[in-house]
Length: 239
Image 1: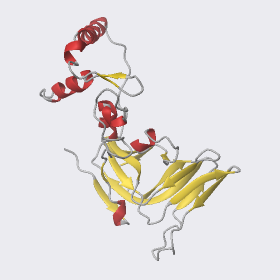
Image 2: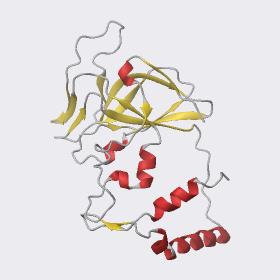
Image 3: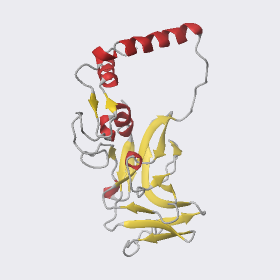
Image 4: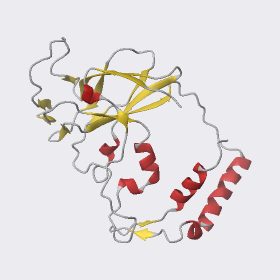
C-alpha cells in the first residue's frame, strides 16, 4: 500500500480516486443484454485503467470555454477579482501556439522511487463532442515540491474545450519514476506456452462465456470471457 500526500490552495481541488460516472461520462446504466447500447464501463480493461489514478475537479464557480479562432486562443470565463496572495491571475495562459497552461496549485508527494504522471481524464476518450480538455502527459518526480501548473493541448480551429464547475479535467497516476525495462523476444518455449494458453481460452470460450453473450444495438457481439478469467485471476495468490 502506497501513500500519496497532497497540498492544495483550493479545497475544491482536493483529488480523489477516479470513479466511473454512470450515468455520466462512462455511459448509461444499461445492462449487458441484447439490444443495449455498448458503453465504456462494459469493458473491464478500460474500467480498470480509468479508475487506476486520481482525478481532480475544476474548482471555479463559472464555466471556462477555451477556443481557437483565426489561429488564436480565446479564453472565455469570469474568474472574478484576483486573490490577494499574488498568484497568477487569471490562472490560464497561452503557451506557444498549440498549448495553454493552467496554474493548478496542487502539490502531490509520492514515495521514493515513484513519480506522478499527468494524463487526460478518461472521460476524454468517451466524449463525442470534442469539448473535454486534453491534458498533455507529463512526469513529475517526487523531489519537486512546487505547486505545479499543467499544460493542455489547444483545441482545433472552431472547437471549444469546456472546464465546468466541479467537472474532472485530468487524471494523475503513480508509476515507477524510472522506466526500467528492456524489450526481449520470447523464447520458443515461452511463445509456445502463450500460444497454448491462447488456444485453450479460444477453445473454451463457449464454456467461459456461457449465458453471457450479448449483441449490442450496433450489432457488436460481446461476452464475459475476459471478465470471468479476470475475476478468477484476482482470487489467485500473488506470484
